[in-house]
Image (cartoon, rainbow, N blue to C red; front, top):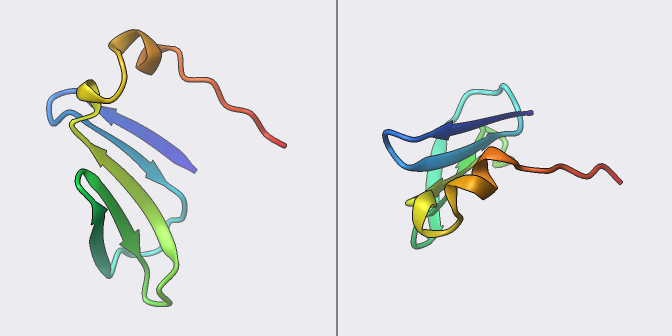
Length: 66
C-alpha cells in the first residue's frame, strides 16, 4: 500500500493495489474510489484535504495494524 499527499492539488491518496485503474467513482463530495477490471477498490482519493485535517495532522499520520 502507498500513501501520497499532494499539497499542490490538496489531495490525499491511498493506493491499495498495483492493478490498473479502470473506473473511478465519486461516492460522496470529495471522496473518489478507483476500481480495477474486477470491480475491486484499489485506490481512495480525498480532495480538499486541507479543509478536512490540519497540516500538523497530515505530517504526523499514525497507522495501526490489527
